[in-house]
Image (cartoon, rainbow, N blue to C red; front, side, top):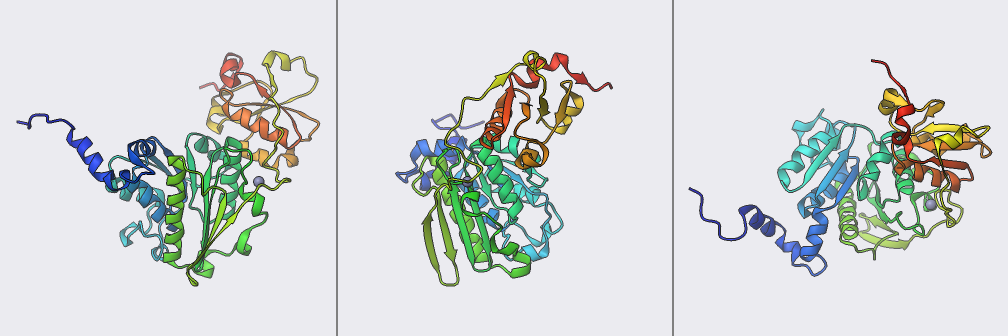
Length: 358
Ligand SMILES: [Zn+2]
């Protein structure tokens, strides 16, 4: 027979005991702990930076973590990717990290996606999380994160490590006055050197990953005093420096003059002489059904929009409802394009759609 109920359940008592040491910090408390538990963080890349960042976010009780990585564990990763053991070699990094972290804290929901983060899958993923952690080692991934976060106005924590050196920054892109990655990093850093070819110290990676976790937790708790600063670490000299970042006025990801977005209906479109109707939903959704005269594009293709469209063309964008299309149209308008949101999106006009015949 169970013991009589004496107040808090065992689960609640376990919850309190687990987080007591951080909850008694005046900057956290019960309210802060609840904020962490209600937070969703997307982690791009599950290598060395993620090993320490994820370990501390999981230990701190961040409610939901989504890990995305298409890479597999190699023996040469183990000097710095300390989430993995020799038994994980050959396994997908996101799946292996999920397995390890799930054993660490039952209160945290962990999702693993075995894909490479890119512009095609990135926008919708970023849009449904509160914060993104860049634990990738590729310049192209950082550009994709910056683009998706600029478009969806989500904050992200940038980081990179090479040799004994590392950098980290919390970029609060939900604030229109905040700098983005391209504001200070106009071209590829380090001449695209990488850890495999140029070497890296595990302790340097861990230091920067821990710093990322600290910046992430501060943001999730509502503290922004360390936002939009570049932290530079030199583990050889054992030095750490902080530089204030600012928005570059000609960075194409920003505009101070955001207009009210123009909407149009499908009926109105038929009265226009010329327009290009662009469907930015997923390929699967397009295959099931799409509007007549529409072209399917990945939202990511719009990053190189000048290759495909002229600023004199009327571009009408739709997604499922209006969420992503508004972000894309706002971005296109900042770039000087005549862009419009199809009001109500695909769902408003699904009855008119061209459908796949099964
Ligand atoms: Zn910028």
